Image (cartoon, rainbow, N blue to C red; front, side, top):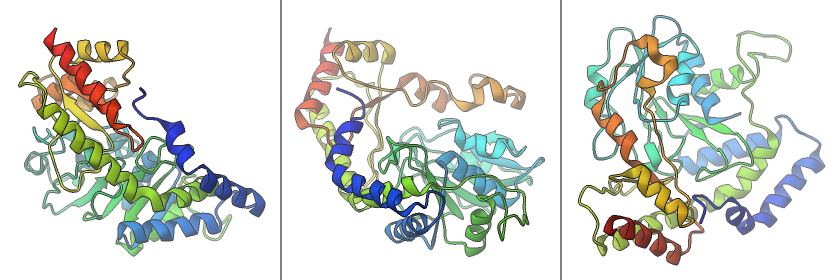
Length: 354
């Protein structure tokens, strides 16, 4: 039982994807063009954003936002240590100092009070992460709020200045490779990001800014256009699976230390992450039973070697550090059969009963 069944998801919409790919190949337009523009319009409409700008990945979406804001050496960006590396990496690549703040113990998203306490006169942005699809509480801050929505498409509208979205193949809406987008209600920021993603050139070969190659490919855009109409149903299926997990766990005798994800009505369950005592042994037991799991994330960012110069030590953010020792993602993809969920919970119960 894989953590994510890519083949099953693609098979469900294969005819639509095949038609989309054929449309791109028949057009002969493999960079830019109507497919990208069409997907951007449809994504903006689906999310309620005024502007959607396609990018080459979710990581590049974050980087492009910071680049467009002019984040540079001497600036500070506040974010969570419990997230994928790109959340911090996008600003660090521009020379900004990353300032971490601990997470909320229930949701594992950035604690807004801790984030505000970590701010200084040099803070240019706070980056909350809608971790695992759970909407983060955004702090009321005088600086820019940049939402890392890589795992939460369809959960909440953009409330900050901008949000970065990922279409990595395993995301709730996945491309057939790396792809991403920026969502924003700021027309000037949207125009700036659209400029920077094409080497800062306008018109072609006339460079008014130093940008990069952050473009969304038409092939990915076409596939995403084919899948986008299914996103709401897929998110609803994930919520249904989460409800079933909760019911199954409620009917099972488990150690009180085992914690389920904090509920939230807008949660889209990119991952269903439990916090488990003896996590590594449990994971090994599930693997022996054929159940795929994953650890998001085994090491907090403030303890990563590349951030050693920031001076953080173990114990700086105890909630995030404890979570890294406990979190375990269980299968929850839209095509997951109910009996598979029952098997997962049964195997977990058997492990703790032994």
